[in-house]
Length: 199
Image (cartoon, rainbow, N blue to C red; front, side):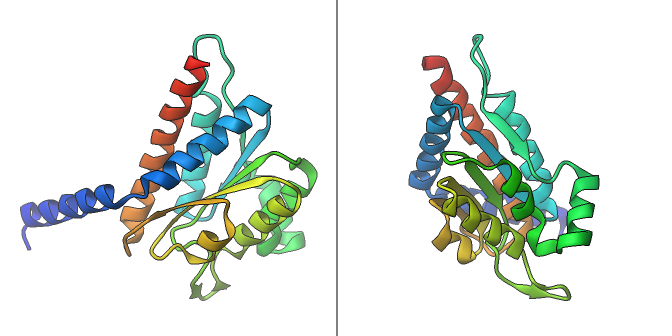
């Protein structure tokens, strides 16, 4: 296959996925986060691997991009960003408790947890089950009276059943799912900025 054919095939897949994105779920996530802004609640983000970088980016945009016209943005924090704390928790409490342990000290009723996972907390590799730390954190947030948003792909995994809102990128491709997760966070933050500007 030539480079030109590869490019055309890839971009063709991008168009198909964009057309199939669940607009209703995206809308619900925007409204849930706008309600958090109105109530002064905090938003926490987290993910593993490539999704960790998207979680960091999302928290940055929730805090800064949504702020405009003298109005504050959302209060946002990424649970992936304190590397010494992460390594200490993994060392002492295990990888499955990485996000749960942080939420125990910070999460309050009404807060929102956003978990990002290509497979939605399902799958198995050399380290056994994938992303169980996200599923445990999500259940804890709900038990504490918070709301949860999932960004997933493939068939949505357990996250689709657990989250209050789960936006599933409907394709079985890790690179495309990760790319669309970044696009979705930009879309969500752009919508929130507009809603905040309008009052």
